[in-house]
Amino acid sequence: MEETKIENSLRFYLLCNTLKDLIRTGWKIWNVKRERIESVAEHIYGVQMLALAIYKEFEYDLDIEKILYMIAIHELEEIEIGDLIWNDITATEKLEKGKKAVHSILSGLLHSEDVEELLNEYNERKTKEALFAHHCDKLECDIQAKLYDEEKCVDLNCQPGNKLLNNNIVKEKLDKENSWSNAWIEFDRHHYLDDQNFIDIIDYLKENGISNIKKS
Image 1 (tube, rainbow, N blue to C red):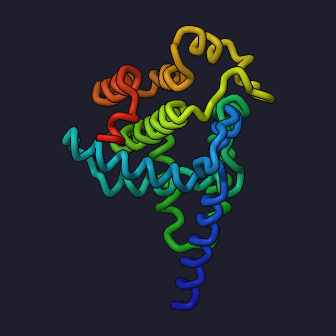
Image 2 (cartoon, rainbow, N blue to C red; image 1 turned 45 degrees about the horizontal axis):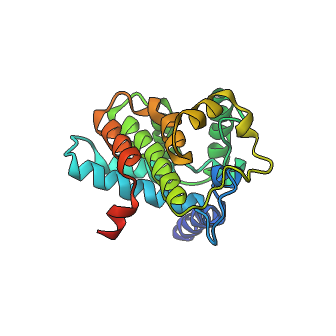
């Protein structure tokens, strides 16, 4: 029995470890030029640290342990199906693919039902914890886009193979905003409409950037 627990623990770790080498699809699509580009595992870590910071600074009355657990497992499906984006698949299709992938990944592991239940809660976004975790997931991506933009890693005049440039909503945001990262932020704004703190954060990002914070 103990040997099974050890092997299950290590098997789960080894599966998750593959996310260290899975580069985030969005950055590849936008041809981010940098020696190292963020992996899915780095994104997960960033979301967790961001959640901790916002939870503490804004004094949310939430179950932070549950939130961190949700964030830790919210990309499990990508071990099997990769990092799919909205332009490649509908939200419903992605949800179904993700559920099947997670069930397959967790097969044979103890307490797999608990993990799948928590993932379902995250995906349904009906609880305060799930909403907060989702907001942090989107915000981390917006912040990373701002960081890459300020490092001049994205050249909008050199975008070979970027199908998103043909999307009307993307074109509208790029035409309206003064930078790629601000367009990215505006594309995500609808995710935060139920929480003014997150709206304030993205507005701050647009107006002030993030480089000065890093240097201070």
